Length: 385
Image (cartoon, rainbow, N blue to C red):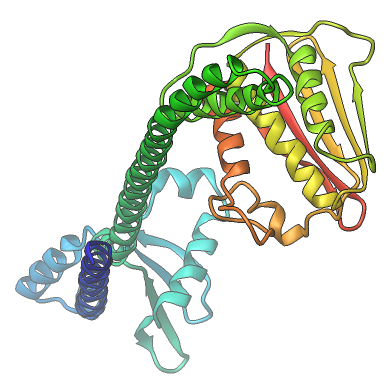
């Protein structure tokens, strides 16, 4: 219910933001149209002032016209003749550009033609002589028109920042939930496992159980290992320098006994017998176990699993390949997502935890290196040395 209310509030706030921005855009557009109309009127008055200066001999009229003419300090204007040939008369343009760029006036004139029709001052009807005055938007009008765009960018950035912050907060809460569940699982397992250890010791003292107790002890130790793994999820484990090859070979031996005789295992170390890296052994074993079990499931009990371990100058590269059914292209990007699984059983958390262990706890990288339907899949682990 709380999540639903949160989404409703977020949608409501988003709607208000859209309405505010939309209202601002419409208002700015209306305001810019009014300013544009006022500027055209000002240019018309300015042209009339130019006409008065050319034709009037009245001192008062000339003074007023001159005052009006000199009062335009914002609207850029270019004067042409009746054939649109540019004269040397222009106003409120960049003087440096005019002098340094010979195409500046002609390019600006074309943009003014697209902006608004000229205001024509007829000097003589026969023969026809006239001046045309093309003008562009003032700086104020440009700012009013660009303002909604700037506001949209600011609102967009704000929404992106809020969404990223919410996503980070959500991920943090999810991590806390998973970590809490893992630790609680370890805690719940601890009591019955301790009890089983006690019962095992009692069974060892009874004659006739010699063939049973070693196998039971293996299973109990396995439960202890699982409890230890879950207990380490959610807190930064201590890393130890271990031989990667030895750990992987031990896990392969463990899985091989449970895989049946139709699965062929191969470990290729490229001639190396020792490759050292700082890892958390129980969690690293869990990673290899998950990958091997996924490979077995993909092959449905028959095929080949190959693990290649390569030691480079700066990295240790581990490829776990199988000859199984492969992963569809549309699913490759989802395999590490919580809950994603193509199997009917399980929660789809194995690869999610695997990614967390490698990338968060070991500062490494794990990804699907290659996969083809019907041919198999290769997962690659990269550990930094």
